[in-house]
Structure formats: C-alpha cells, structure tokens
Amino acid sequence: MNYLAIDASTEACSVALCYQGNLYSRYQLCPQSHSLMLLPMVDEVLTEASLKLTQLDGLIFGRGPGSFTGVRIGIGVAQGLAYSADLPVVGVSTLQTMAQQAFINKGQTQVISAIDARMAETYCGLFAVDENKIMQPVIKEAVIAPASVNDYITPHRNHDALHGVGSAWNAYKEQLANIDNISINDDIEFPTAVAMLAIGKEEFKLGHGVVAEQAQPVYLRDTVTWKKLPGRK
Image 1 (cartoon, rainbow, N blue to C red):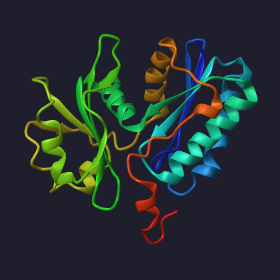
Image 2: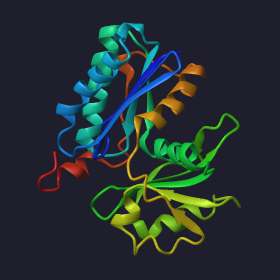
Image 3: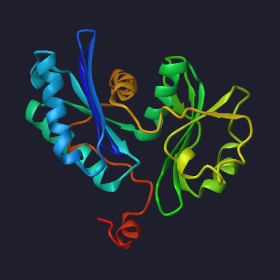
C-alpha cells in the first residue's frame, strides 16, 4: 500500500512518501513558514517518485497536539489533497510519532514524549511498543505543568528502560529533573513524517481511514484560553 504523510504541527515541517517500497521524504525546521513550505515539499516527493497523488491509497496527517496554527495548516492541506484525489485519511498523534521515531532509531520500547506547549506547560504522553512494533499510548495524552510530568507517568511506567523525546526536555530541564532513571534523546525534538508513516499504515490496516471531511485535530488545550494571550492567533 502506498501512502503520503504530512505534518506541520510543530516548528518542523515534514513530508514522507512510501511508494512501492521506496521512501521519499523532506524535513525542515521552519517556524512561521509552514503554509509556504508544505505544498512545495509534497510536490517535491511526488516528482521524485514520478507519481501522481491519485496513485496513492491514502493520506496520513499530524493531528496534534502542537501549534494551533500549524495543526490547522496541516489538516487543511491534508483535506485539500485528499479531497482532490478522493483519498481516505488518517490522523496520527504528534507525541506518538516522536515515540515511534525513538523505536525506529534506537529500538527504545518505553518513551515519554513531551513538547513545549508554552504557557509553562507541556504536551505529554507515555508510550510503549506493541506486538506490531507500533508505539501505543499507555495513558491519555495531557497538557500539564512540567513539574507534574513525573506524577503523571510514574504509576503507569513498566520496568523497561525509560526514554524521553521532544522539545520540552530542553525548555524545562530543571522542572523535569525529578523523573528517575530516564535517558533523553536530544536528537528527537519534533515529529517526522517518516515515523508518522509507520503508525498511519497500521491505522489504515485496522480500517480507521475516514473521508477528508472527517479529519479532526487534537489540541489538548482549550483554544479559547490560547486566544486570550497577547499575540496568539
């Protein structure tokens, strides 16, 4: 099966295409430029694969959490592309994607994903690998104060080694220092569409694809609260 994955939910903009067993991808840190970068990156991987969008079996998108604007851009592009090519879509968690990247890169099987949510908070989730080599949520994703992350995950972590990924580990280093026996992957700050592909493929296998109009974001934080802050849109 052949899929395109796109993500604009964080500071990174990422696209990956799996076609006939070959992988084509683009990744760039481009805060505030996602609306300019995402479609050209899609065009680049399709051109590199000599492929038309209608030859794909589905589209995978980053559903959040992350930047409200970035999540909306990603979903809007995903809906437009999927609608034009009559493709089903699947949304994948930003946090789950980073945990999957840790498994792909280093075989890590228990991961805390935590990204800077601003307002002195983190978007956080705990994940463990399943029998299909997909990182699955152990507990519900949450937006919480960094100092509360340890209490959030401790009752649910198993005896496997624990690893941390995401931008929050640098942004809130002191507040997160109370977590015992954890190693941090400094090389995984943001999600990649390559890791998103692995999760999205499994979701399509399970029959979780929906029509473009049903693509939904996951913000975790109340959008009304966000909009009250100066400079937020």
